[in-house]
Length: 324
Image (cartoon, rainbow, N blue to C red; front, side, top):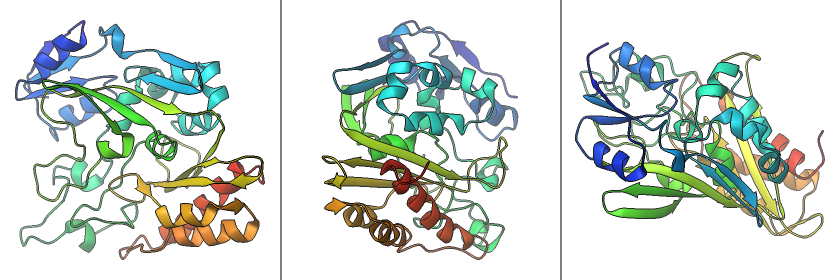
């Protein structure tokens, strides 16, 4: 590991000021960043620890809204009765992080903004993993766990456990930076880099994620993950859905795939099929087909197209109360 300096601010303003200096990087739970530094995949001149910034932690589940501070640990969120009562699907999403140590140390903000698990990136070839000829090493190599909805040369998958559910809920993120505070939909935190050196999130220099909020009253939601085995491995595919409407009727549906694209993949056409009436098995099946429409799998990951259909079908059934 290369040497770096360390800063421990106690206020959001101090953290922003420190992060504004080039070469600075946020240290939240450290469950991933420290490994990247040890492997020399990422290099920093200064780590800015957010552990001492109390205003970045905390959970409020009142008034039909859920607010989660970015430095709240996954385990604290999992243990918050008000949060899990308002959004039971949080339990599934967090329990997918199978390590008790990772849940205890990892934070909500760290989960949302964690770096891709792509093995090309993790071996130092960059996010786009371009070869000497400018072609994609991923497209020509082992791509079993990569995107079926790639964007240019961006073929890694967004690894966040919470992002698909929060995007499905229409959650908003509060971001603080040198120019003040801004609120954006959670999906707007993500982007597919188009050139080497670009990041996979939209935070600018000096900006940090403060909290996420979502309206949760009257919303039925569910998460379904497809895994090769129950272990510390990441899912092969995940789907999160949110449904609103009176009784069995669905007026609005949002369906988001995880581990399918460089960003949490909002399956708009699938949501349109699921909305506008009562969810029936036939309508769920049609929505599942739509969720996988437009997929562009590579040589080794065609199986993920069917997994996208399966995850969507199961998540919709859970949210509609058709599956236990």
